[in-house]
Length: 79
Image (cartoon, rainbow, N blue to C red; front, side):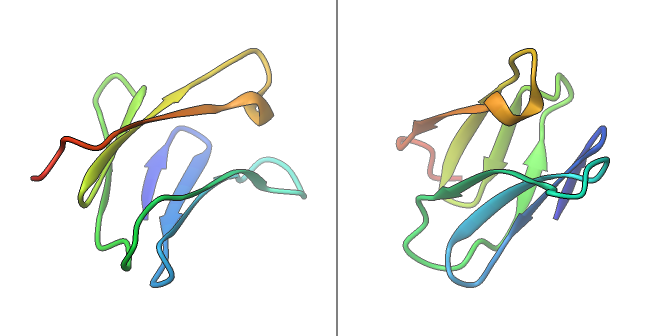
């Protein structure tokens, strides 16, 4: 799990990453399935714009509404 302001990002054994907005009842604002195995770790950057997960980097770009999060994947990350 990793916090980013009012977002709690979680990773699961099925490879799913979920971005939750804890301020609202329907809290799941974005899901991402890109891992072939379980998500072992998540870390938001200091700028709160990039989320690193084991095996790849996922970039969250915030729009006006938190439900409009976009995800970009960079597959070259191996650390």
